[in-house]
Length: 419
Ligand code: FES
Ligand SMILES: [Fe+2]
Image (cartoon, rainbow, N blue to C red; front, side, top):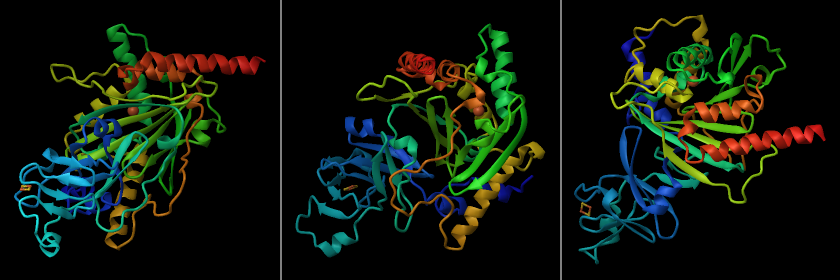
């Protein structure tokens, strides 16, 4: 159990808060690449602050405070030029670094005067179909090139803006027993009540034991299911919570980074960033990238709980805008949640001591690979099609195509094995 102050410290993300200081050490996706190609400026809210993110005519990306330093109009309604963003109201122009390049009505304004007229700017760049932003102080770290963002495959991004704090979603990433309860027993109950077929890969996953190992990018989660031996991928390899706002999960040719962007204390932008790359799959020459909203709420405000991520969303959001940890009853089986909170507290301490928190990457690199089971729950190819049919990917415009890709790949693999 926590005090209110402890809960506030762990969950508040705004400027000037201890966790806000931690979270301002990382890069976050703030737009789909597609969006700024279609219209070159958009608003984005991140860590409790509002920004304008834009792509210049020269192809550079920028992110600046939404409010114009002149008299406060929104720069989201600015004109994007080759080398910057010009406020729509009186035409002050800002470079991607935030410097005031020109004052429309005062062409002879002195550089000295303009030096005082800049807008606060972060840094932005593109990777893997997403535009990423760094809005912290100090030199930006490297944008970590996790395998998901650079590997070959079809990219499928379902997303939803959820009314809850990001930390309760991160706690779910180190909570293996919920798979047995929520995606197993509860799913079975819903399937029974509604007459739908229970997906085989998610039923009957009884846990024997779980383990959590901190590593340089977060916490590796392992599970041993009843009937598995310790050589199984679920135990031997596991998969990680990627500090501080992601989880890397998948198996059987599906690779998914679950991204949970802290928009503010009570909103989280969730992106299920999935790369489909099954072995033996007949991949198109230019694999597509799609993004689409996922449905999680019925018209009457109740939750849609007949698919995996809908069940997760129900659990995350019903915990409250900010889960009240002063009233919870933490027990032995919440050991992963405890480890996660400890890692966040250590990060706060590190930052207060002037150090980088964990998983800030300063070294230039080509790719960062993270552990991931190849075979999930010891299941074969049916895991991928069960997930597409019964997960957020069922809302994808590519759902049928993706399913076929996995089924054909499985057939090709078994052909190869038989040969
Ligand atoms: S408010 Fe932006 S130029 Fe005047
Ligand atoms: Fe889940």
